[in-house]
Image 1 (cartoon, rainbow, N blue to C red):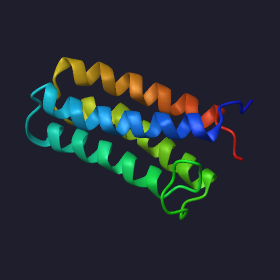
Image 2 (image 1 turned 45 degrees about the vertical axis):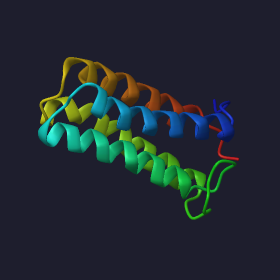
Image 3 (image 1 turned 30 degrees about the horizontal axis):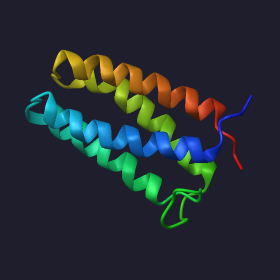
Image 4 (image 1 turned 180 degrees about the vertical axis):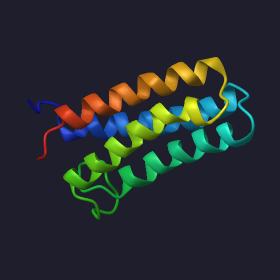
Length: 111
């Protein structure tokens, strides 16, 4: 059942992207793990900006395309702690973000 409005989804997109960027710096992550966390956070913000919803800047991506990116994002977040060495806080944050992204993919209205 899809019940989450796209406005709420958009707010979550920007909050998660910004939080990932801030956490990459705040946790003193280093090396490839830091770069991966930073780039995935920025990527989340960029594809949110390019989505055709209330908080998008340039309506290039449809909502189904955006949700496909979110599904890939969720998988990438689950793989981050496996592939890269991350501070413990980022390991758990990655799992939580992956779970939340998966829930949003399944519950966000298509418009």
